[in-house]
Amino acid sequence: MADKTDRQARLAHLGNSLQDAAAREDWDRLGEQARALFPALRALAAQGPWNAGERAVLNRVRAQHDAAAHQVAAAARALEPRLEEMRANKDGWIAYAMHSETESGASQE
Image (tube, helix red, strand yellow):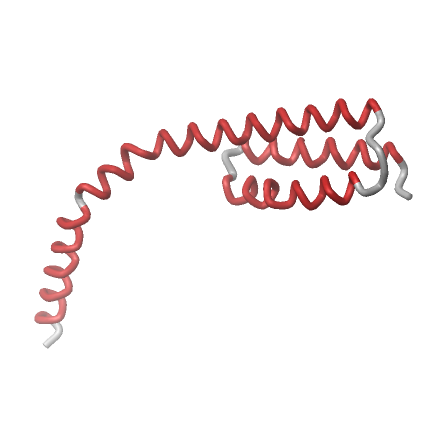
């Protein structure tokens, strides 16, 4: 069985990795960290009951995960006006692309 301090350190590392990726707004890395979280927690939990120190770190990991999720939601909300603008102008962009393609094809002949 792994040493309890190793388990506590692993928990802290999981939470710190989430927090760091969120702080850097590295959404790809944050997604990777979030997907890896549940299997890692399940494996750590299989090592036996959590002691008081581990439960405290586990609560911190939960808070770090929640904070990262709130940050992702805020970033998504901030992008929404730009995405809406892109949706609204989609027909114009398609028409422009088709016109440009037609012109470039005619000039190559």
